[in-house]
Length: 259
Image 1 (cartoon, rainbow, N blue to C red):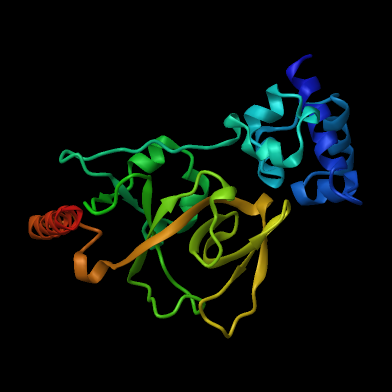
Image 2: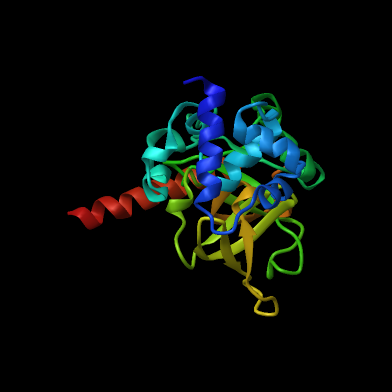
């Protein structure tokens, strides 16, 4: 089978798994015309890259699987667990061997939505290192908005990259990067179409974020005030020394507990 034939069979199969999901409805979600979408399902035309990515995000199936695997052989649950259906970010380290935590400044927030998967864009972001954060990929995002008390516009959330939505834990806070911007919310539940999230501020009601709109998910690890640490400048040596000292003290306590 050709790649185009596999893709057309897959997107028809995936749509048919959703009750009452017509070509017109899925085309509306993908922001294309029904006629254009119909040609994708019949294999007459290959979808543009941005539409292919939108299909991938909506069904939470990687483009690799959409183009190379006959998904009709798998259940929805088995599909999510397939090895090629995970997206892993490389972990970069600084001169001291500590994880590089890229900082997304307020003024570049919208630019991140276009460059989040561009290595050159990410490589040009300033970064910091926090020695107590290991075993994962971390990134710092600006806080803001009434839905995020007690944080202010000088606060940054440091999040750990979530490779699969199956790794989400109820009650935990996450930073959702969506097509519309950044959303910091507490995870409540999910289904194949979206995730239900709630606010820390009880004034707001829970709501659902559609998977098709989600670009990345980062699990909240800690918050840092840039005014206190000067995050938009290189981290001072005294701050680095403080964290290294704290790291050593924690290790000493752990070693003593093992005895």
